[in-house]
Length: 545
Image 1 (tube, helix red, strand yellow):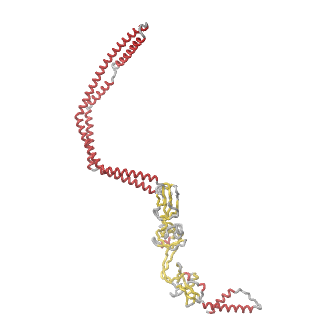
Image 2: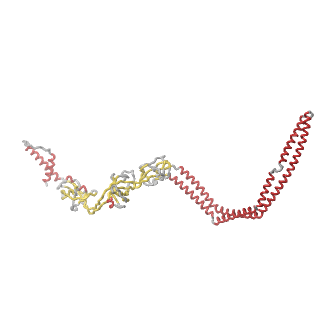
């Protein structure tokens, strides 16, 4: 034991001494003596120190456990929901209530469009509803009375029509024949009046001629006297006026007399003659029969109206009128509801719990609805409380997973061992690389993009899938096994108060542990740190790891 430590000390000292080229000089024996003395003192000091101070080392014992083998795939995260937020109805944007990166809850108001036209439509719809309700109230109160009143009116109308028929049947022919008699008498009277007027006209013409002749003779006498200046100018003018007046009266009498010449017509006679012709024609065609038929048709119509009114009363038709009025109220209420929905549509709400990822429009822009082919969304909102892990795996590997199974996911940002649930395995194969697309839902504990420790859509992930499982496997911490290569490694065990270096067979590494296939006692103490200070036989003191 001492020899080994002496060798070690010598090695350390020798490493610090510069290499001196020895030659055959007179001083060589002296130099070797000095070196030997120094070496002996140093060796003694090191041996004393080693024996006095054992190295404190942490130790562990192998444990038996279950190991799960996994295979890893690279993929990325996407939001489980990505929604384009459109205007409910086309309109100009008047306010934006959210910004990119802002967390929103479902039904939070994120924008508003101009609702003035919709508000006017609400006012019109409210007015129409008020009118409909008023009509309904009036109809409900008066409809039965109105129908019963129609029945009374129909009964009265029929009675009047029937009385008129009796009267017409009794007097129609008499009235027609009396009209003929009256027309004949009127015509005869007109003819007699014309004859009398003709006689008067002839007599007047004769008187006018005599008067004109007397006035003319008197004028001729007075003209001669006037020329001889036997009468005054005024007397002669009087005679002249008398002659002109007589001539005027003669002309008027001639005009009147010409009205009664042979072949001339007189309006009164013509009118009486026309009325006489009509009266004769009415008698000829027995017009009273047509009059009776017309009155009979009125009786028939009145009877039909009475029957209809009776049926309306029997059927309680006022109930139908009330129902029509009630239906009008319902329609007006529906129109008001639609108008109010148009007002409400001006308020755009978030359809999901999530984060505003993108803003596409600004205040003043015209927002179209989702149904419009040219409409643009106002925002894009993404749901981040649950994310979607997406990766591809070779076709043969897909037999290891099924929908509903759990996978472990790690991110490049350092978030480890997130549990995801497989919810989609594509039924088709990508021909280019012979892989299948797989999705898993991943809960996001933070659920927002506002924190650095939350999962972020678009980030690269590593997906670990279980490929096998073994039980009762012997495991040691990975850092307790050194120089792992080709299925073997080196460990330092504690035997008594010293170390023993031993080569062991190892298997796979699982997390921070490694499988040891070599057999050794259950309570074997294996040094887990400071192995660089140790060799076989190094004194140590044990510290439990």
